[in-house]
Length: 240
Image (cartoon, rainbow, N blue to C red):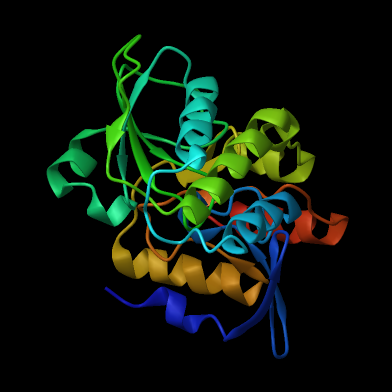
């Protein structure tokens, strides 16, 4: 499988939904597999991380940040119970393959789901059952808990992030090769790896970074300029 992400020039700065390299700017439709769904470096998250870091709370010792994290999860997933993993990579592969995923602003489907929380350093959370208040999982650094908790509240307080409207892109999505679920866009039919590599290159040449593999969906950003929306619609219009 080609390393599509290696085609992206070195990134010098990430801000909001855009990446700046030495000579170009890209709209990020990958957003670190969805972990940066709120954009890169949202101010509130950075402030929370700084406050915890200034107290040198890096070691995964018990702290009040654990209670705050659990409360935020209970608001995001009312009535559910949770098992916390350090990252998506530490979730057993069989569990990852068998459990449906949930991403911010997705509709809840089914009883269990593996949640992708809205920050690059966030843990992975298995959401399961009803009415169980016993939240299991590994201990985590208060710094990680602080920034993840802030990001969860940002999702809860900003429902408009999940309701972005791009008329030109939506017109193409209504009947083309792609389908939209909320802010997430996938191919209607899976493409071969070589074809996905061509799609990746086409978007990159037009100024958009998309996921390097089809495992992750394209994520519509929180805002686009008129020119960026037109260019995105043209990329989506090209038949796969």
